[in-house]
Image (cartoon, rainbow, N blue to C red; front, side, top):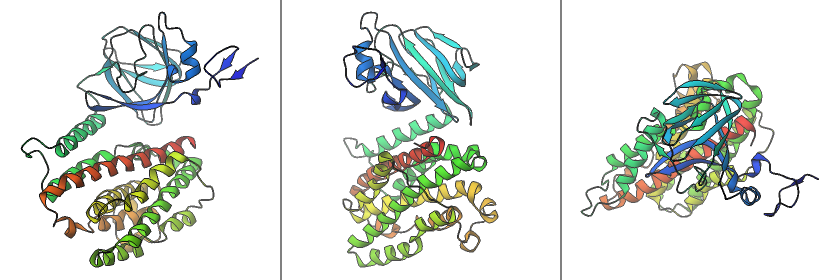
Amino acid sequence: MTTLATADAVTSVTTVARAQIRPITSVVVDGEVHRLGQQRDFRRHPVLSAFLPDSGRPSFAWVRLRDGEELSVHSHPTSSMILVCRGSVRLLGERERPLSEGDVVCVPPGSAHGFRTEPGQEFHGLSVQFEGAGLYEDELAPRVSFADDMNDMDGTADILDDAVDDAVEAAPDGSAVPASLAELEEINASLAERHTGNDLFRLLRTGRLREDPRMRARFVTALHVWSRNFQRMLLARQAVCVDPVLREEYEAHLREEYGHDRLLRDRYGVLDEVDDPVLDAACTWFVAQIYQLDEAQKIVLVHMVVETSGHLFGGAASDVYGRDAAASHVYDRDAAGDDFFALHAVADDEHRELGRHRLATMPPSEIPRLVAICRRAWDQMDLVHNRIAAWALEGR
């Protein structure tokens, strides 16, 4: 009898679906974030962990890269074998070559290697180690060392992360702390540039949304979840604001944004609802922040981060969904008309400048606190975008 794994003890033939093994998509090594694509170590599932022997200590993990994702060149202290189970991928490092279904890669200890997919390419594999813990079994202490010559996108993201970390971590004399609005703007611009390398922007650049109507439908359905929560965020801010000057600015902003969730729904025929707790949680985080932050932090959250993200996203998505005027990057409100994406490319460029007069009055001692919410908000926007991309690609 074949049963589904429900307990630690394995007393009969038992199956464990790939989806039941908790995935991770990145690890931190020496303070730097490294993307893995998707990695599912067998020992993260209690039944598989109990079933695998500790003597000899083999480790297994499902791995996946797709659509331009790259696992940067790295090495580890134990031998490893990678089996290409489906799709294709390019081997990087000491011996570069294309790999296809059925190929087996043997990696001796300390050998530099990595993997990269092209846009539209997908790779599913099995990673096997024959001794010691799995490479990412303990995701907080991965057994890998990454090379210095990483790809441009991940390297840039890591450098920017380090820069922000350094900026918000005060030196003993306070000299390392950003102390002006200009420094905050510089950090925000760097994080915005990093943002354009997330999964959703990469998907837009591939052109696949233009070619696949079912993928486009899934994309706008997931995007509608974010659009609804954006409306709720602005409504909540208006309800709790007591500053008369800011309240008037916020009201004008709300009038210009109000109903854009319905515009998206009606313009692109959003009929289904996305039932995704991860996407819901990522989006409602922004609404919850309105009830916790002060006005300066809210300006950073809404205008420096969310509206800047909307401007960048609107421009990128206009090439897939927008009118000719948007596609040619001649942005003005009349040309944008009622197109959701072109409209945001135009309006959000203006909206991201709101509230700067308040930030300009902040004393230097307050800037590190604003940098902290700036970084948190950009990380959260990346999470929202990456989840929308996952829905567009897979419907989950």
